[in-house]
Length: 231
Image (cartoon, rainbow, N blue to C red; front, top):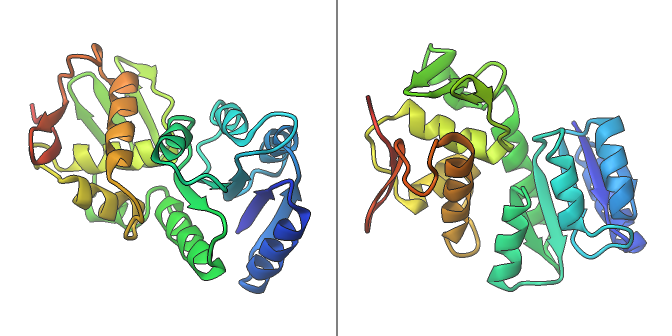
């Protein structure tokens, strides 16, 4: 597995690289946002660790540019810990968020969790249902290509958005709480509030619903959670 680490703190990058290589990962490094985009395109890493505050373009801008051509899992690294900063990171397409200073063991655990979820075109969950394609209403999801379409047109989903949609469409009518969605999609106990789920649900609606403000399929069960309407 190849991991791209981009941070302008060279000592930190060196330490992360050392620890990840000891785990058997191939590590590519960069020091600014422009390099992050270029290396993501050329090296095609399996996961990206991306600092928020960098010269050139910042990590959030870099993440948005990377999302234009890749759904590779992205973990944002930052000294900021405010909830709004985290939400902005998720809005830009990040899959996870680690606040500096962090424990390297926790970082490695989060990396393994994301890689496990993204490996095998959706992880173990894909093998529990023999169907390779799920079609409900105007939304079609292809587990093999990890593509989704709305009325025949591609819906550009991030890795987490795809996995969230796959889980909901695989269980039409079943209501999932935020905690259940976080556990099954993110794969570990999230250290923060569950508004992360709300952000991803809103982004999913914008990409697959015909009228996002009045969704037909990704619905809310007030006081409980979210579900995908069965036809």
